[in-house]
Amino acid sequence: MILSQDMRILEAKSNIPRLSLMENAGKAVYREIRQRFELKYKKILVVCYHGNNGGDGFVAARYLCDEAETDILFIGDEGKMKKEALINFKKIEHNEKIQFIVDEGVDFNTYDIIVDAILGIGIQGMLNGEISAVIYDINNSKAYKVAVDIPTGLNPDTGEVFDKMVNADLIVTFHDMKKGLEKLQDKVVVADIGLPK
Image 1: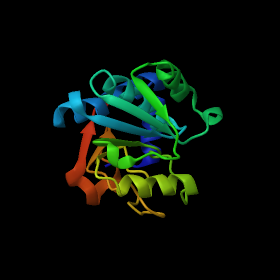
Image 2 (image 1 turned 60 degrees about the horizontal axis):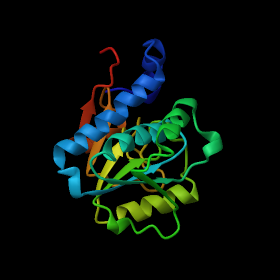
Image 3 (image 1 turned 180 degrees about the vertical axis):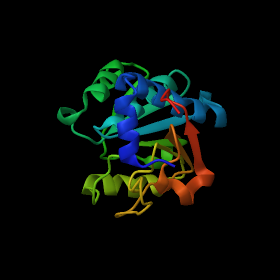
Image 4 (image 1 turned 135 degrees about the horizontal axis):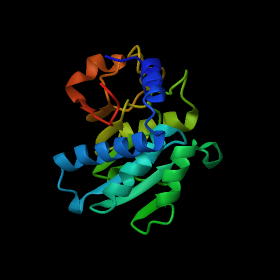
């Protein structure tokens, strides 16, 4: 089990570029989805925010769009994107296989799979209104829900839910089991992203 601050220290000390870790994380999410589904006829929505969790989502979308209809709902602020997330956003910004959609009028029920790449271990305090509303919509959809690293709304260290959380069917967490995921272990897959054990 690992705490979020230890994970950050490990990433910093590893000397592995954050861009490489993000690439490995997004690819791991794609692989886990692909192992469970025949993607050819699936419709996938990746919901991203402007932090590194969103960056992982952009990478996953880049792989998923080669095999499935893939849309991205970006609910963050482009001006606040972290450097690595922005690089991965730019890689898919003009990809004809990926459609960027706006929040108004999204029918979450039209998707087979929804990927939660909103907030990872960086969650702090209460969720903002937009994130809270999107979590509500995700949870009320019939889609299979995949959380990137941590379900949005869950404290990665304590397992506490501040407001509401994404009720994920699958949680692809990175490097090691996060302490806050203990109660959800049966839904968790731990993916190797290249950090030293």
